[in-house]
Image 1 (cartoon, rainbow, N blue to C red):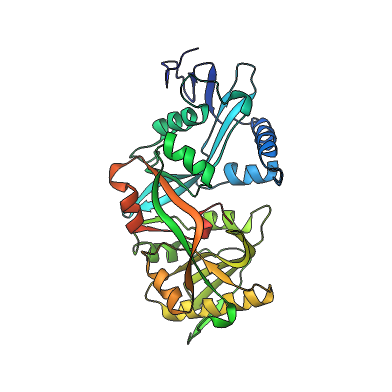
Image 2 (cartoon, one colour):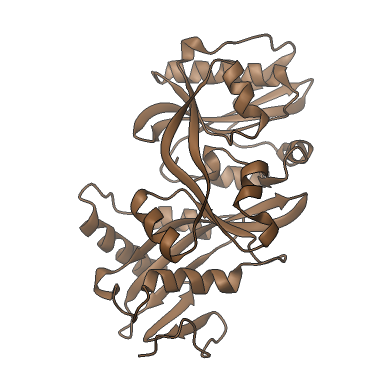
Length: 349
């Protein structure tokens, strides 16, 4: 068996590393992948809840930003390892780009020593990122994630994870949110995102050098068609013009059951829309008996300060946000300064 990182046998979407065939997903393979995923994680975690095919298909195959999946097959055709990335369309300095969120990584214990001197998991990640990362319309500027401690140790050692930031959260009891005037703003709860979400996103996106695309198909996929979680959507309008939106869910984050601000987009200068949406969030939290409201932002964006001015206070989380850079200028220090994201950009809610 060869221990070369990548052999010259690459053909199309498949290539061999030692005895393993590394390949991108093809239709019909999801059942074997999900079965292997559930088998591996059930052995490692007694509290593991099996992944359903419906969820897997939603997370990867239905994503409007596209698919990003790779697995390793053993000589007998069994799934030896699998890495799932959530594809994300971005605007980077105003230009369309891509990134991939690293969310599902697993190797069957029977194959963890299947390569000499290097791990199958690291080989799978590094080989795939090497072929899909870079600058270009169909390449990925960076890969990122919020790994648990074990994955962080492995990723830092073998997959070149670099820390973007140790993530903080903003939390506040509903009764302590400081609400001010929202003159003329009307708040509605649509069943799905309105068509003018795209136009509104374009107006706000120029405030940030890095932001995931928030158009109607992407937001509906993330928050309306989720097969397991239920989210509430609010839009804020002035004279019919969309001025902001928020997404709420009562769920678990960072070990606590809370009212979660899953997504939020309001122009930094629009205090009235922000106040109207905070009032809506307070009512949703009270209705679901949530003791606290929690949001996640980078500390470098205006909402980090704006939420604190409304009464939210910063607290640590267990999550480091990490990145593997594929375009040099979009390195972790640049992302730390310029990247806008919320909880809804992650797979944590």
